[in-house]
Image 1 (cartoon, helix red, strand yellow):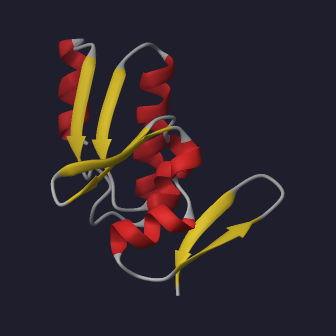
Image 2 (tube, rainbow, N blue to C red):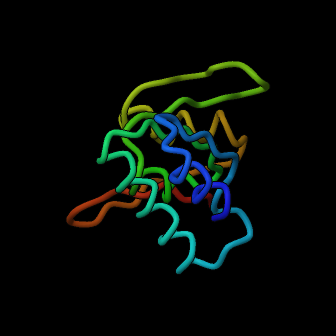
Image 3 (cartoon, helix red, strand yellow):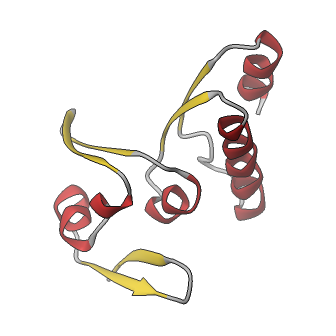
Length: 107
């Protein structure tokens, strides 16, 4: 959170964060992601790395999937699918849908 505060105070147009929600409980993960989304809506460019696919789906608009240091896929949420996630994480996945969203889960 300190790094985000610094970026806000410095009025930088781009914020780059590596796993900003790592080791946080769910409540604080959501708070961080809501803040980053708000900053994005205010015109800041936000670039973050995440391993939580579902958190990314809920708050991000563009995605770059990296595999072995190389770009595997990029685009909007259509690239977040079972086939790509199985290739990326090397585990079986399934997609779960509700009325509003879909989720990718390992099994």
